[in-house]
Image (cartoon, rainbow over all chains, first blue to last red; front, side, top):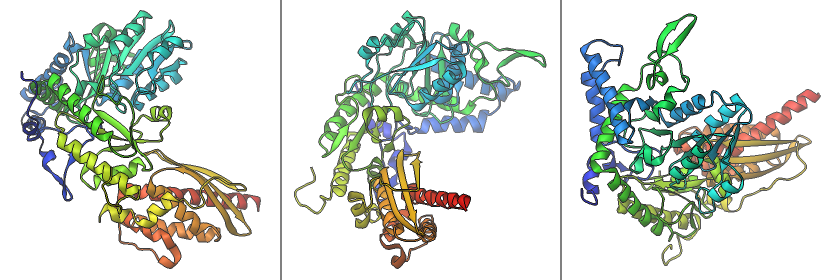
Length: 421
Length: 150
């Protein structure tokens, strides 16, 4: 496999990337929010609905068998993609949030007062709120890692404060921050968690789409991620858990498919993964996710990671030259993913977003579902440009040009001659 | 419509130099409004005496549209009757949700006419309404407590 792929050839697989927004070509820099979909994924979903559609597991006809084979084939593909040892370790959910809620609900079933759950201040709301709810239900206490001023997980502070201790039952942190781009040292934190007998959960929403994934290298017990950020459709997420752990957990949602025997006096439950998949699952979405995994695997996750790394370094350098622009999080492309959050002096993120949108440049403005992190960094909200496997250097150049214009426009410097930098 | 038309000079002027900004005493009611989608926040105080709005003071974090709209709103509301302020709210809201088909009377609405362009950007309507919604809430609370007393 050569060191890089042809980005222009890749872009031809994504019809949406050729569209215009007003007079401008689309510059899509919001892939951390959701990625665009290649033709191959859309075709696979269409083929499923047009030629193989039926319910899974319970339909005993030919179409039912085809749909079941497709659904279970997707499960095996996901297992292989993340280096799971058994396909039964892959639970399909509707998104990463549901996967994390499943984890929070089942892992904390036996917790009580005195027990501690540990997250970090850089988490997405979906890796904070389910644990807060679990604490309310059980009386357990929520604690959190701080971040350093550079936006890295504050492990020194954690050691000083005894954050990981004999009371810690669950540790749940993001592999890659959706705001800062920080890649967290998951294996190290997992070792700390395991040393005190705690379960290690990882929010892989931003990590799995960007980096080669091996659950054994991560050293975690559970990994949550979503399909739509990895070129797959919306409506499907994954919770991977080691089989022994999953087998020890109670059900999450009740309904069809998750049972063994149902009597009016009580029911027994199916083994994993079906115990956690009540009702008709996202079948076509699983087919789409399978196609997405095939797509990114053919490109090579290592080459995707290398592409993003190179572009992130370029973007960090170029954006650093925009007047009044401050990057949140690591300013060097070391242990850093392709989400770049920033503020522009005197210009609210909504206004930055609007100005860029008028030039066809799509970024995100707000708190990116990470309000505690923004509070910690002392900013009300920020802008975020996020890259993916199809992003080009030319798109970064358009972003920087748009930011220069925005800075000058709101700074009242447009009328003055002599450039805007 | 271009984004430059959205950001009228009047809006940028109010954004850079906010009128009546800061929280002041005395006041009858204090309200806190947020825009959850972008995290914008506004604390607003309303003072009413002898049938007139004597002061609207505020502390806000937000975009140029919400900040400027709040600034313009205070200029329009202060000095008039609470009833007039509610009428201004109704007129402004009708315009901002009118998708560009409703225009404002410049005589009555002054600098607020600059926000007619915002009506063409549905995502920003909430921004323009933040200060107006807060002042309406405060006015209604003052009216409600006046009724309780009488």
